[in-house]
Image 1 (cartoon, rainbow, N blue to C red):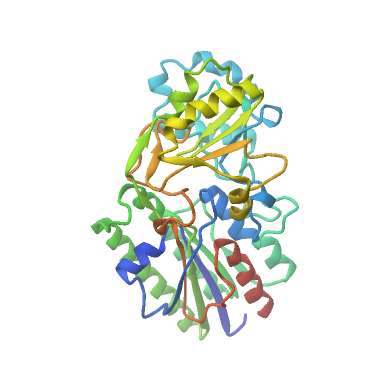
Image 2: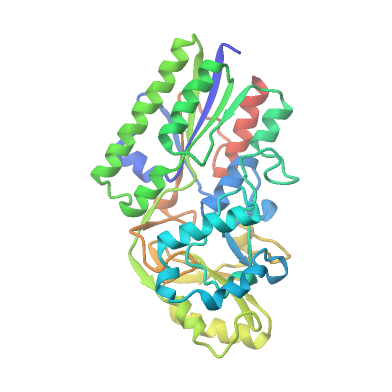
Length: 384
C-alpha cells in the first residue's frame, strides 16, 4: 500500500451545463474543464473510457445492430407468435424480466436490456455488449482498464456496476482501507434522474448532487483515516439535453413498400436512425422518405463520421446514419415507446451534451474529449 491513492470517480450524465449552473464541488475539485462527449450513448462512451479507443476501433455504437449472420437470438424466432397480446409483452417490467432471463440463457455478462426492440426483428439483430466491459479481457483483444492494472501489478478496485451508487461508495471506502492504490468508482443513478428532470435543475437533482458531495467527502475522510494522500478526478460521459420535439420517423419508414431484412435493415435509437441498404432502389426510397425530417436532423457525412470516431469501412454501424438535432427524439423507437424529458446521444458539440473532468489536482492540457480519459488514467497508473 502506497502513501498516495489515485481515484477516478465516473458519474454518468454529469454534464458541464449542470456543473456550471450548480457550482458542484468548486472548492473541493477546483480544477475543472468541459470535455467533448463520445458520439453515441453510454454503451459507446463506457468502452471508450475503459480503453481509450473510439467506436471505429472497439465496435460499440448502439446496443443493437442489424446483423442477421451474427445474431445470437436466432433460436428465439419461434417465440414471436406467442407474444400476444403485444401490449403485455411490451410493458417495461415484463421486458426487464425477459431481459434477465435471456441474458442468463445466453451467458451474457455485460449490460443487456431488450428495451422496445420488436421480437420479430430480434433474430436479425446482434448485440454489442455480451461481455462485461469492466472484467478482465472484457473487450477481447483490446486492453481495458482492468487488464492494464493487472499487467502493471497495481492493487486496485473497480466498482461492480451491478450494484447501486450507495454500495459503490461503500465498497470504495473499504478498498481504501484494504490498501488499493487505484480506484475506479462507477455511479449511474444520476443518469436515470436526469432523463426525468434534465438540466433545468430540479430539486431532485440538487439533492442527488448534495448526496454525491457527501459521499465524496467520506472518501476523503477514509483516505485521511488511513494516513494517505488522495488525488481524486471526477469524469463523466455526457450531459443531458431537454426534450423539445418528437418525430415518428420509424412509422414513416415502416409504411414504405419495402421488406425489412430483405430490402433494408435498420435500428431506431432515440436520436439516431441507422440503416443498411440492400438495393439501390431501397436506398432511394428511404432517403426520399426521410427528406421531411431533414429540418430536424441530417445524414452524417463520411467526414463527420471520421471526426466523431465512428467511421468504419465495413459499415458495421450501417450504411448511413441519420442524426436528430439536439432535443429532438425519435418516438417510438427501439429504445422506447414514449419520449423522455431528457436524452443524450446528440451531436457532441451540443452544449447540453458536454461532459466534464473535475479534479483536486491540475488537469493535463491534452485532455479534451472522453477518449482522453484512459490515457490520463494510464499515465497515473504508470506513476504508482
